[in-house]
Length: 178
Image (tube, rainbow, N blue to C red; front, side, top):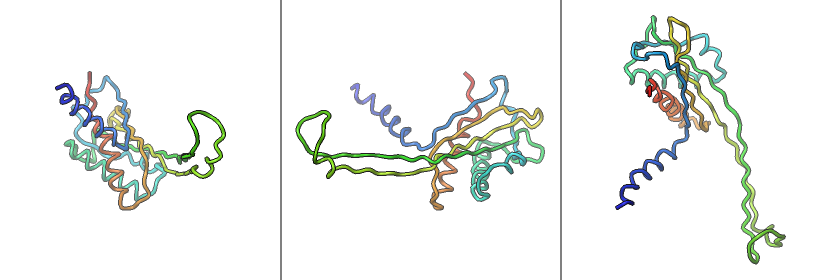
């Protein structure tokens, strides 16, 4: 009977562990987020982002989709200004696998190691996307979300990957006060 109660928990654990984007958020605990209903982009900040214009447009479209799904409206006189910032770094992974044959366990020289050893090197790009929400009247940041994950160069998967980053980041907004 106890195992039946553990199955939903294990399933949830498996599903959440498959996520490729890790998110964090921070916010001003003194702010009431309920009055904010409209948004616009903070153009000076968006213009400084050092990514391709194509990826920038992908991110902004994904933000529009998520903000509208949350009931926000784009406005020329907004309550919130949205800014983004990105950074990336190249990761190199070196994996060594030895399937040598010999007697027993432990350390020591194995003349057969040279036949079963294999080394693989792979590279990937880890990207971080920050989404800042700024109170338009006070010009103060009130919320920041951050998503970290592996980027893709595959053109067919870029929209999907960027949408995943943005959706997971903005799922943290508005913050739940405890």
